[in-house]
Image 1 (spheres, one colour):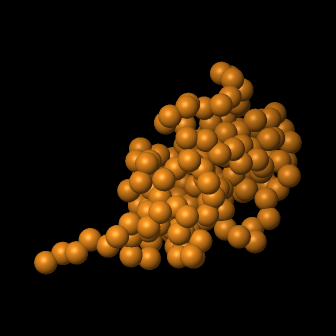
Image 2: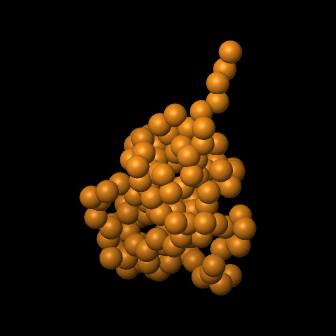
Length: 151
């Protein structure tokens, strides 16, 4: 027989110690010792353990494509780069380090960065639920838009 654990509310996340406690408008639940979104279509956990998985996934994809992008980008001329569903922000940070003259913007439901990872000054995080409100930017505002594994 299977028993379902009682879902804890957003306010209990800090006690559980697994989440990135922010009031984003996204409802979450603690199931076992993992944090999940309740009001967003993301089936995987969204907690510190998942940050490590997402970073590993980034490193594996970077290795597979032999870099962070395949597009013919010019580091001197590219000024604005957007990452939709930026997750941990790892891709944004690496792109900000490679494209020093560009402004890199990462958008996600909530900040998912590793604690202690320094963000370059040309990287900005924007918290937004793009499925409900769309992207908060003007059309043609970016030279390059990156999105991966966001289904």
